[in-house]
Length: 116
Image 1: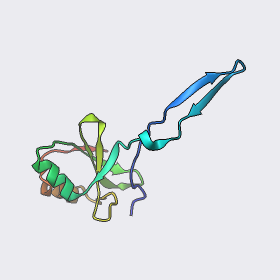
Image 2 (image 1 turned 45 degrees about the vertical axis):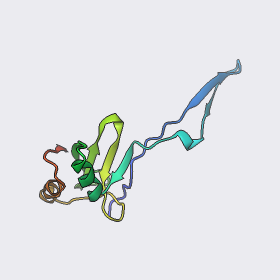
Image 3 (image 1 turned 60 degrees about the horizontal axis):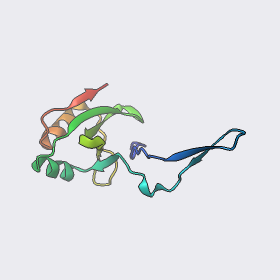
Image 4 (image 1 turned 30 degrees about the vertical axis):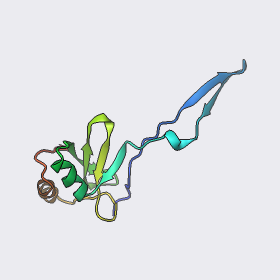
C-alpha cells in the first residue's frame, strides 16, 4: 500500500515588519483561506466528468514512495489536479503499465503522457 495519500499545496500569507533592529516575519496561520490544488477522483467521478465533456491532461507518473508502481494524475484547467483513487479513497497504484493502460481505456480516455 503506498504511503502517498494526497499532495496538498497551501497558500500562506505573511507580513514583514521592521523595528529598526531587524525584520520580523509573521505568518497568517488561519487556514480558512487555504485551498488544496490536488484532490482525488475515483473511477465514477472520472467517467461522469468525461461524459459531461470535461477534458483532462492525463499523466502517468512513478509512485514517489515505490518507483516500481505507477499512479495516474489528471490535470485540469485553472491549476486543479486529481489523483485516481480506489473505493477506499487511497491513491490507485499499478504494478504494470499494461494494466494501467487497460484501466485508462475502460475510463474512456484516449491519450496519456507517461513520465519516467
